[in-house]
Image 1 (cartoon, rainbow, N blue to C red):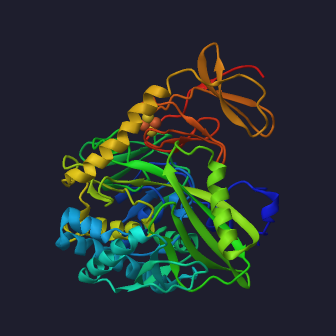
Image 2: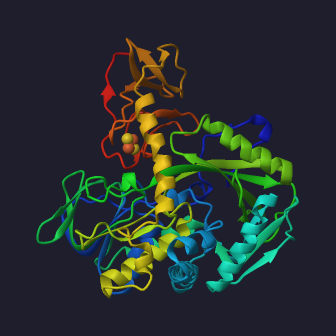
Image 3: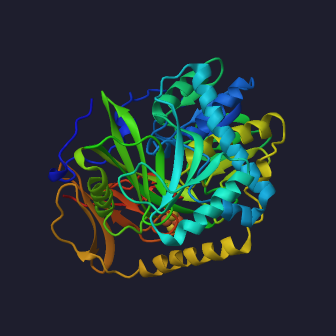
Length: 513
Ligand code: FES
């Protein structure tokens, strides 16, 4: 079992997700020969795995391809709240898309909670699933009316929501909204068992299988890096970010954010329920069983990828919040996550573009992917098996997006242009001493170069020009990655792609050292 360390020792351990550290590593094979299935799914997170499960139950043969190991990406770094409560969203989307469609959003997410519960029951999965109420609270007078309004709208949409000013938290609140019968679980205990259910009888899970392209002739094929391919009638792109070699320009219709989580042993017992505040900075809390007791997960501090100043400060802010309000006896671990957000805060689920009726996408979950991943699975299953789904119009990737949302989004994307331009000036530090484990941008003869020294002392130099559209990357000291401030791609210290939309690794600069 993992051990706590003292908060006095600072961050003595590298970031590591509790969900990953507390479960076995999977060992599915890579794709080594051409095969044919009914549906090929790119991405082995909650969306790909849940969709694979529903399609297999519908009698189809599926193959899931994951570039890394399954359930280690965003699904392995979540807070794992299974809720139809996505912050204060219902008043916003009811204004944008009308009550009728907002009701479908609410219904689909409520149904997603029940779907996960039913899969757990049917496959008999021990994954610490627990029904709990979920709360959005505020400590600010400015949000009291917003919360009251959200309660009224949520009730009209059929959600069991209520208003309260009394929560069992150790700090005062002004108002809160309660959603009844939401849930939480251990996401990898759940997903690894569902993956076992999928694998076999003509269906497959492939790991370490990096998909580099999709070809469309008589049938579609998904092509892996080693040239092997899976031919299928339908293809689902369920990776965090859709492929950049297909139309749809998703990089210009979403932004990516990072958020942070710390897992601590609190001095006092955490109350029943899951909590998130309405104002900034975000503070999201839930407990989870650990040994004879529990750990408290505190999450928040989100920012656009590549725009954090010093990523370690975000962890420290969460630790300070937890210590002030709950008292810290020990820190178990800390980790961060990445997710995409759309202009109207509603995911893109459906055909990637109207021109590609056999290719589907699910993305833009805004950090609520446990339920919206399951919503995606139900919609995509129905679109593939029946040809329609009553919620699909709400999530259609080609939907009209209301002007207010677009204007906000354009303003946010002006930052992209600024980052593109400002990143091109050679302001890196002069090349100097770089410690083991350290990365920085150095200035060599007027050129910016990314330098990283690994734990064995070898210096790795890379071109810090993002291979997606040429923005300048920034070093993320907490995660030891190169992050792109434009559309959120991330690269390992030595330049391999971690998060898309970038597809190609960074150019390496070879020197003798
Ligand atoms: Fe688009 Fe880097 S992710 S330029």
